[in-house]
Each structure stands twice: as C-alpha cells, then as structure tokens.
Length: 471
RNA sequence: GCUCCCGUAGUGUAGCGGCCAAUCAUCACGGCCUCUCGAGCCGUAGACUCGGGUUCAAAUCCCGACGGGAGCACCA
Image: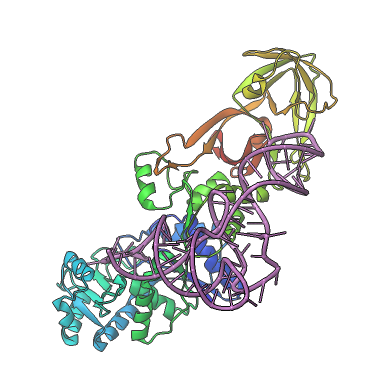
C-alpha cells in the first residue's frame, strides 16, 4: 500500500489537512506501506516558497514522517510528454474560446468548433505554447463527453498558460497542468495505491479514471471521505484572511483558529489531534463537530502530565491576623510525582474576588495546601484570622498567591464565528497573579492552573503570558 | 436547473440482514472520591428522517419522499 498527502504550498496547514495527512500516514503505517509527501505546486500564482517548509514543520509537529517527498512541478516534462500522447491519440485538443464561452458550452452540453481541430494543428499550437510563443488564452482540453450528465466530464481543462514565476521552477515553464491532470498522473506514476481525497471531488472521479485509461496508466484505488468541520471554527482562507487583514485576529496562529499553529499555541497536543481524527473515522457523512471533543481528548492526555500551579484572577488582598510564617512545599501534581515547589508565606495573600464574593464574616475557608482562615472583614481589602491547620470537610479550598506574585494575563479563546459572523467577544483576557514558581517554567510548557484550567505558558521578553486550552 | 454524495441520541461515532429493546465518546444532570470547579469511579437521560417493498427476520437490502451537503473554474 502506498498513500500520499498532496498539499498545495499556499498556506498554513489546518485541522482539515491534518485529517487527510493523518489518515494517509496511518493507513500506510497499518499496512506497512509507504507514505509520500507531494507538493501539488502546479499553480505558480498560488505556490509560495515559504510554505513548503512551513507545511513540513506542521506535519512534523503532528509526528508524521514521510518516506518520500517531491514536488509535482519537478515532473512537468513528464506531464508534457503525456499531454502530447493524448494529443497524438486525438484525445485532447487546443481550445481558444473565452472562459465565458467555455462555461456556456459546458452548461448547455455544446461543443465548440475548437473540438474539430486536427491532431496536427493541436500539436503545432501546443509546441508553440511550450516554447513561449503566442497563443495566449489557449488551453488544452480533454476530449471527454460533452453530453455527459456529469459536468466534470464535459471536456475538462488539462493544461493552461500561467505566465508567472514559479517559486521553485522560476520561469522555466509557462504551461501548467490542472488538478485533474496532475493529480491523476502523479498518483499513478508515483505508485500510490490508495489515494484519499475529500468528497467534493467525487464528481471528478470519472475524469481521473478517464485520463489514466487514455494514457494506459495504472489506476489507483480512489477513496473519499467527508470534510472535517468544527463548529464556529472556519477553515477556509476565504473566511480567515479578512479577519487578519482587519486585525481581528493576530495571525494564522491565533488561538481561536483551527490551524495547526493556532491549536499548538493554545496547548492542544499532536496526540490529541491524532486521536480526534481517528474518532471521526473516514465516513462520507458530513458533520459539524463540537470542539469540546478535542478538548476532552486533550485533557485526558494532559491531566497526568501537567504540573499544577495557582493563578488568581481578579486578585483581592487578604490580610490574615496571627498568620504563622511558613515555608511550605506543594506537590506539582496530586497523584504523579513531579516534584514540588517551595512557597514562603507571611500574613498577606491574594485571592480571587469571585471566591470572596459569597463569603461573609465568620465564614471559614482554606487556602489550599496551607491552612484555614476565618473571615473577619469583607470588602475591597479582606481580612481574616488564622483558623488552624486541620482540614475541615466541605470548606472551600481556594488558590492563592503571596505578595511575591507574577503578574500575568491569559488569553481565553472562544468561538470566532457565531452564526456566520465574527464574534467580537471571542477572545477574552484574564488578568491576574500567578505564583512565583511559574517563572521557572519553560516557554511552551502546558500546565494546569488549579480551578482555572489548562494553560500553555509563553515567555515573551520580560512578560509571561498564558494561552487557555480548556478547563 | 442538472448531477452526485450523505441522513443512527444535543454533538460526533460504531454497527452494514438475525447476537441491536443499538456501541463508544462528548455534552447535560445526579452521586461517590479528592486539600482543584480538573482527573477518576458509579449512575440517569437521550437516536436508527418518513412511507412503501423484499425477507421467517431490516438500522442494515430495494424504491420513493423529505432533509442536508457538494460539484457544475484556465483553484486545488
């Protein structure tokens, strides 16, 4: 078994690409086959040099390895040869009609006069095209079936002229194969046995096989699956690009976006994406998944690995009378041995405003891991009294910091789209104090702030910021 | 408009003629456990779009309706 992942190097990879890549890769693994990474860079207007590397980085992040890597644009000579074969067989012809006329003809199943062009004449124009002569607007069309009920079969375009410098090939070529031609040919000659593609290509299957038949090339076993869509998370560049241009999102790695970079930044681990893709399977039923499924998977992976720390949002000052000075060590994980951190306490603490709101004088709560405190005074500055060490059942255990805190903010992502329009409240900033030990973390580490959630820590210059993954 | 694909709990998903009074996950709710509102454990609730047909037997096969999606580019 040989599979392949054929991205166009025109942008960052997103969860939809991940589904395809993971399915392709895993199938090859399961059947002990080969997996090919092929850049379908047959349109110099789209392909950008930086994305070849970017996409490979994204794949590596997903722990995907490939046995072979190549660019379709490296094989143009072969494509030309095969095109010539089609021309000589009378299976392709040069069409010089306008795009509008072609569209019109397709719609009404009417062939244009170009279809009558002889092989000889077509071959002549074809050569002229290749050698950068005139013949602008000419395309090479498959002699398909203009009467076919399937519009994709009504003489689809095989090659067209694009006079633009290619990021890899420079100005070496100006005649480029379309997806229909390049995809079929490459799958076949590269030895791919099981190419997967998304459902929207289904109507092009007959084109795919027709091309290979005429060329007498081996036919792979095409398979289709539905596109992956996540509620409130658009995948299309059409929708994301305007947001970036308007400055509504920071970039393609915005934590609200389902790009691999966005997911990574927010603390979704590759293994979670892999498991998520598996849980979806490769059926053709279209569905819109809720992101909570990804979160649940990610949480299960992270829970035994993430260190625990305290973070206090909306901090209010708490002074404790008779507070014993302590040097305590708190475990970094409740059940897994990950070491501990030391905290020195005196009589001043910061606690979460929300935790204090429902407290009244006389209530007892526990500074988690430390001791109990009885409220004496509520308000803007809260005071309490030391109330012993002993755990009291059913008292609230709240997280806290000393005055030796780190000020930080956490970005909390929400659904970027609500009912198809930009959700202005999709990114919330949580300001607060984290305990000192957080400064020892490596940038990129994913931790759990107790009672807050899993957060990926990033160090930017002097600042420490957090990106909220999920509860 | 034409063509194709799809249709199982709120959301996904397994099942693809009998073992299905339908799997698993997620979500919601309840309980247990826990010095986190996390994790874990236990439980509750919740689905085969509809109508015909084939068959001893249909979620599974066939037909039709309805609903959803996709394609009808010199983009992939």
